[in-house]
Length: 151
Image 1: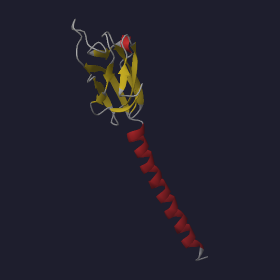
Image 2: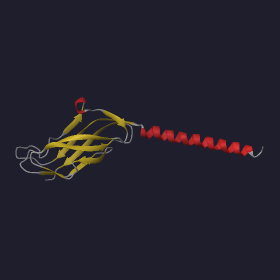
Image 3: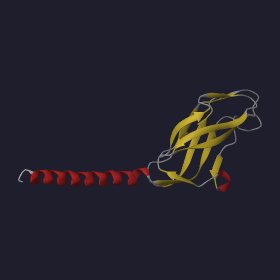
Image 4: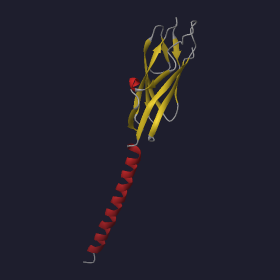
C-alpha cells in the first residue's frame, strides 16, 4: 500500500502543473492573439515632381482614407494584414518610376502589387495595392504611407 501513495502524489503534482501551464497559455492567447486593433484611416503622400501645368507625375497627393466611403474604420485582430488601394495616374508625356514605399510605424509594409520599384507608363491609370500589417498592440491607429517617384 505504501507504494501506491507516491503514485497518487505524482499524479497530483502532474495535474497541478498541467493546470498552471494551461493558465499561462490561455493568458498568452487572450492577451496577444485576440487584441483588437481599429484602423481609423490613413494618408498616402506621393513625393514626386510636377508636369509643366503643375500636376504631379504619377498621382493625386495626398490621398486620404477616412470615413465610411473609404471603408474606415476597420477593426480586426492585432497583427492582421489588410490592403490599401492607391490610385496612380501618370498625366505626364513620358514614363516615370515609382521607386520607394515607406510606412510609418507601428504599421509595416508586407508587399505591393505591382512590386516596387516599377515604371508608371504615360497614361497609366490604375491602382497600387499595398498590403500592410496592423500594429501588434490593441488600440486605434491611422496609417501614413509615403511613395517616392525619383524620376
